[in-house]
Image (cartoon, rainbow, N blue to C red):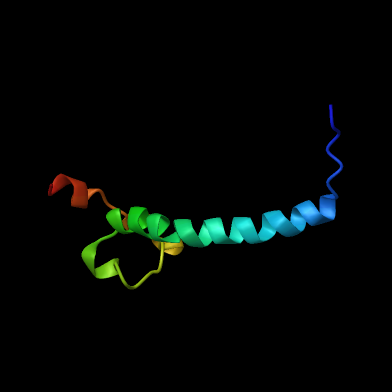
Length: 65
């Protein structure tokens, strides 16, 4: 069998950009999930979740369906 002799630094240089691209690609999905638990007036006030006021999150958006 062939041994994996890949240099750890070159492996890191490949994985870092791939991880960054994956996070950028998943950002809209994270925002979508965060938007489902916010109130309508908080939707554009906080980019993701209001960390200082997590008690304002609600599931009313699902109840109205």
